[in-house]
Image 1 (cartoon, one colour):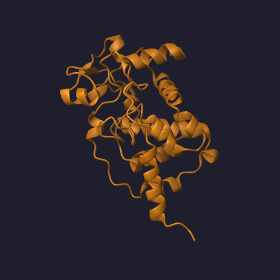
Image 2 (cartoon, rainbow, N blue to C red):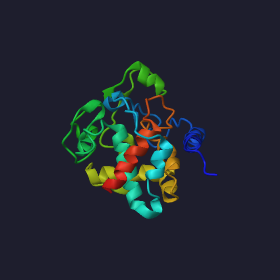
Image 3 (cartoon, rainbow, N blue to C red):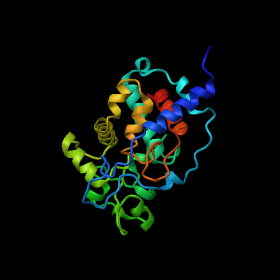
Image 4 (cartoon, rainbow, N blue to C red):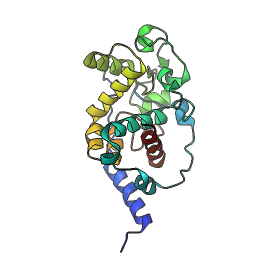
Length: 234
């Protein structure tokens, strides 16, 4: 007898919740000894997630297997999903404006390096509540910039590791792909495990479902819909 759709959905969501990673205070997006925070509540987090037309299980059923769409397409879709979670969707995503956005919505134009390194922008002080939620003392700041809200220390490490020439769209994408690789999300994508990849990536990006960083992560249904959108654009 065929499984009931409701049971399938409930099973997917339960598995996601049970297997999601714990809070990683020193994940790829945070370097110990600094006051920078990788992903903190910003304008995108004030966007209320709309109620998707279908629950997660149904959405998953409509996403072709990675073996059919191709691994590069899956990576592209994953990056699209992250951008749509970190920024105001669709306003700052469909036109690639996210690549030039700083934490809080400030824009920068010099892509020769991270905007704090070039001096175009300065670190933004966070509220005491945000600092405490991230495990810092009052007065902490963030330097999150670009499509993937990369903080200065993380960017410097990846820039040097990958020998990235600038902070261009291409360089930001390559840095994000490296973070996916380091988190273990890339390996799971290759195994056709999108839910597992999202769980791993949520240790880096607090806007993703499964994150326990108390920074208003997006719903699983929202993330899956943006992933599906990204596949269509790949």
